[in-house]
Length: 168
Ligand code: FES
Image (cartoon, rainbow, N blue to C red):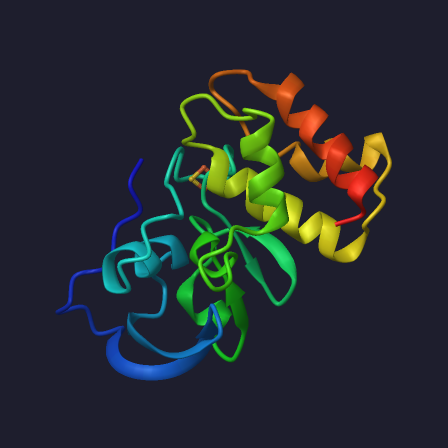
């Protein structure tokens, strides 16, 4: 289900009512404060790397990082990122170089269709940012909200093993 941005004639719609740091860039928050963050990212900012799967907090395709925490941006209303630091998949690579999490996942062929990839990568980024040597149970807990429709979890977990070995 596609999150919907409220009609621009709605009384809750206002322009430039706040600001957030999105991928390190100060960004004006505009429109309906109830808009799901994923819709704002994709439709207002053109950041289409964050995917929409279920639209109801079940699949994790829309995972982004807000103040260091992985959240489902399809359920997260725009007003909750006011003043926050937000990281999306577009903000991970630096100077044209993939983040090590992305490189290792690619080397292991960890994705098939790839639709879940941005959400999985952002969940792993949140995990390894707080714990460079997570135990198996912690990895599984961190990824339990990310559904891979291709069921490609074996290679994904092999890649995570390498991330732990390399202490990324
Ligand atoms: Fe947000 Fe599925 S699209 S959890």
